[in-house]
Image (cartoon, rainbow, N blue to C red; front, side, top):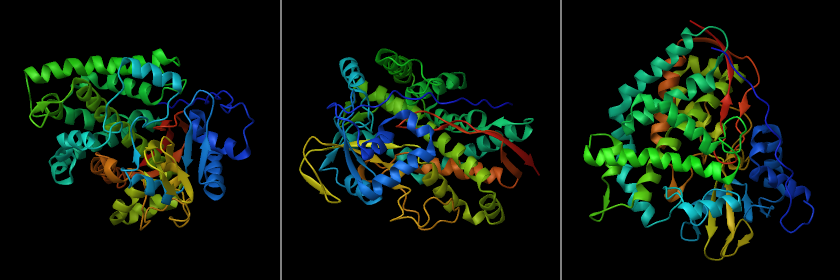
Length: 431
């Protein structure tokens, strides 16, 4: 196996919508709206630290984007997340260009769990909630353990440098979630490609194209695939999650087709891509912090805290938007109805007001009040599954691993939503 590295493509220069020059704080805030900025961690974290210190809620209106308020402190992100009556997901849940918003609205916006609010959000979430509770996931423990063992076997049997992000971290969680859905293995590569095109739409290596039409076509392809799946599972229901969604009812009535299609999209994509990102980022962190790797190998009881620290360290979902519907004061800033808040989880999870030495990777960190899974009504449905997968993989990896060394520069995807390691060249030796 060989690793490939690529250089990120610089983003066009950002401009304020009112034509005025960007202030220094504006320039820091641009990092939160510019997908390419997420490929440069040093620059991004410096910008986040400055905003937390000087302007923790910073209004920003760039040309071509809706006006937003960048929220960087843990306390403020938490405050907004726990007041769904004042801050709603609709009409904007993820930052997109105005042109993209118009195109998606014309062809039918996604109606996933992250896009809608209660009471409909709670009704739709209830369809699959039992599937993702820890006691229900227990039935998958053996299967997840087997897939983790097979993934580590593939890595250990490989020669030389391995691109762990692409060849190990991506396939393992994908196999898990698609087996839960009941999709055939022949479709795994298609699902992986579509997911990367959806979340990596601004990345020159991952994107299908950069026009709004090309980006929207990815959603259309997802819908086409899942429409056929709905028809099949309605005609021939099985015991898998795909059949649950295809035949779901709320108050005795079938859910809308767009809700069904959107449900599949969020389960099939977020159900694996965020875990892949955490896994790859965790392996990178252990390679860059050999003392923490040795500590974890010497004391496997630290696995639960190590999993939480990996999730905090990586924070795969970088932001969600929340829209104020009433006047509301947060951290000394007054939101007005219609204001849009960009909740930066990556910044919140490095806030030194909450975390001791937040820039230190510590597999024994406790407490660890990270917000990587969100908080409140929209807390990640698959959080328990992600933790189970990471623990299963590390359980298989740590006793067999002798050394772990980066064999090149890691490459992050250009994305301000779900930013992942698209390449991680690593050389390992085995016991």
